[in-house]
Image 1 (tube, rainbow, N blue to C red):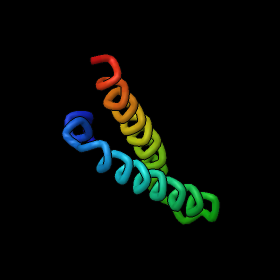
Image 2 (image 1 turned 60 degrees about the vertical axis):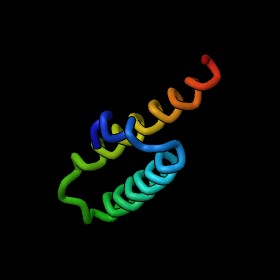
Image 3 (image 1 turned 90 degrees about the horizontal axis):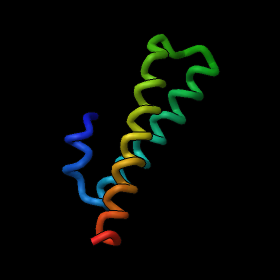
Length: 67
């Protein structure tokens, strides 16, 4: 997911998407522990998506307070 796509989301959509991505990350991490994951690079991609979502949601939350 690109930052441009994330910025177009509303705050409620951001929290929903963040919850979905965190859930995916949890399930992938559990599958990795049992040796069922072949594409381990997906873990890193999901971690970065979570960071992007959190960063942009915080920026959107601060924007109305600054204005």
